[in-house]
Amino acid sequence: MFDVIVLGGGAAGFFCAIHISEHNPALKVAILEKSMNTLAKVKISGGGRCNVAHADFEPSALVSNYPRGEKELLGPFHVFSTENTIDFFEKRGIQIKTESDGRMFPASNSSQTIIDCFEKEIEVKGIALIKETPVIEIEPIYMGQKKSIHKWKLKTTKQSYECSKLVICTGSSPKVWRMLETLGHSVIPPVPS
Image (cartoon, rainbow, N blue to C red; front, side):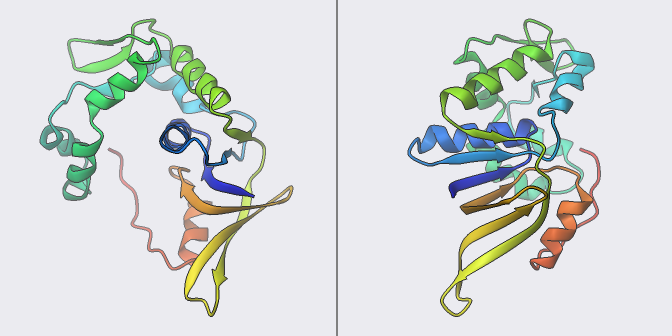
């Protein structure tokens, strides 16, 4: 039983799990990843250099890069901005450089720098990383007469896991989208940002 399970072992999943653990170290947190490799897109992003952010420091400018959700993202970008992203890495000893076109990379010019940072952080924080474990069903467990969700059960190809809170960071996974639709969520066809 975990307090929080983050579904998806990419950059968003690692970043999310690290921040949850950082803000509440008492929580038992796990990242559940379907494949053997985590952070695979980080490895290849920016031609292997990892494009960490873009030098848009004003939330109103940053949201203009999103074809949908511009209004919805304005508030969150005021809470956590490009500056916060840079600060996160610099506090961990990673210098970020800005190129003339606004793209931001680790000064090392290697995505491995970011991967090593994420992997070290989950180890230091005691976040469990469970790989090669595809989820086949997400089941809410209700308290009482289906009044509120008490916890979540994730059935995988290997075993089941339970958690109090579930965060979905699987990106463009139609299989997960279908699972979410069975729980009553609507999925809007995605577009690139």
